[in-house]
Each structure stands twice: as structure tokens, then as C-alpha cells.
Length: 134
Image (cartoon, rainbow, N blue to C red):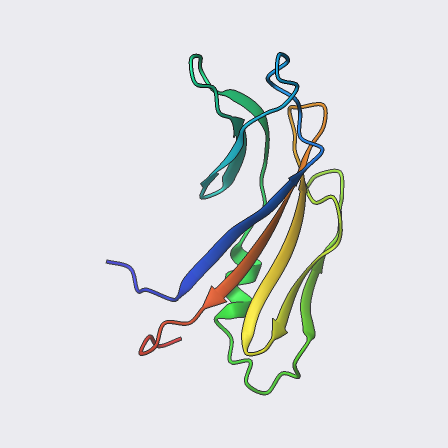
């Protein structure tokens, strides 16, 4: 069994300008499926197969590597790393891995691919598990 390092909390904060998949009600019933290495947004349908509303991906390796460091000497509100939107990633705004209040966290704005419109906002936070060695 692999050594447990800590807990990565992932919170989907909100969706922005999501595609309308239910033309009769002019709305959607979005939900997010998170997979290691891939993230997708779907529209829930009661009587038919759920519609995909796009997909996005982001890496967590840098986040985990920073979270595993001894940051006790680092000043509060320190930006540990910044990611910028580029053609080869899904970021729609700058995203900073920060050290604040004794926690490593990151707000992520992702532009959905394979759809005409839509973004999702996520928040990552690392939780150390008491008794686990770094």
C-alpha cells in the first residue's frame, strides 16, 4: 500500500456562462465529475442520457509537491507558484498556489473545452493528517 501523504479537498465553487442543454426550460442541471487527470461537467437529464457540457483538466503535481514541504518558515499570504492561462492549458485566469493561515490552497478558473461556452471555479486545499510523516 502507498504511504498516505494528506488529503486534497476539492470544492467546485460555481459554474459561469455554462451551455444551455435543456432548450424547453432554457436551463441546465449541471454537475461535475472529478477524475484523477480529467474533469468533466454534465447536464443531468431525467429521461434521457446526460449531456456533456464540456471538459477541462489541470495538474495537481505542483500543488502536492508544495504541500509536502515544510512551510513553517514561510510568511503568511505567500504565493508559492502562479499558473497563467496559455493555449495549452485550461486556465482562464491566473491561478496561485498560496500559503495562508497554515494551509496550502489554490483557486482555479477553468475554461471548458468541447463546448461553446462555460467556465468552472474550483478551490483546492491541502489538509495534513495528524501523525503522517512528510
